[in-house]
Length: 254
Image 1 (tube, one colour):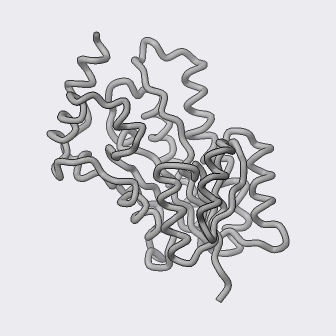
Image 2 (cartoon, rainbow, N blue to C red):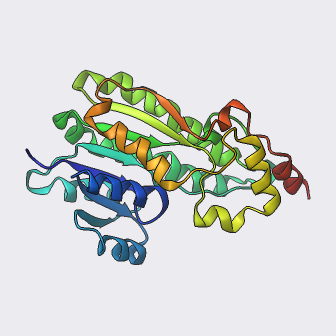
């Protein structure tokens, strides 16, 4: 059986790195894509089955070159995980167009560009796309006008991909992580915010990068062969209770 190949963007850390590791453990070859050359090189050096591709997903020429590198010499793309994103939070009144575009060009444009570039290879393999959005794309919250809007657009883009590329057997699904215990989150979340998240999440805790990767890996696999066009929250039940945290609202007004 020919080894399957996945492209994972934003693979140098966090959910992208956890997903890359899981796919490699499951027997996939993984093209780990990131714009952070130093961190990407350090992580790929430790993985047998992953290779790094330096690419800024917001730049069309770099995306085309990245996909061409992965598919060189008859290489396939059996799954594309659009995980690369930026989290630039701030009050709506302080969000100028430059900040808006900085978020959109990676979080939304990057998903579109990578998907369009990989589409011929995915059609040939009847492959899978997994787009990473956020709970912030499902429910409005404070400080997230650009971020939340970009993720809401990713959710709809996923449905368009499923509707139009299903004819070629391509499946497209979207994963919406809730609060995840990453190094970045723990560095910027105050004790008050952490407590508020715990109170708002029915499972009363943050998720882990591995738990998000579990769902992504499943959606890439043959076990999800009849699942497409779906938006799946991996959030401990957070979406059932809303996301308007008083601690965040108070901080934004201070």
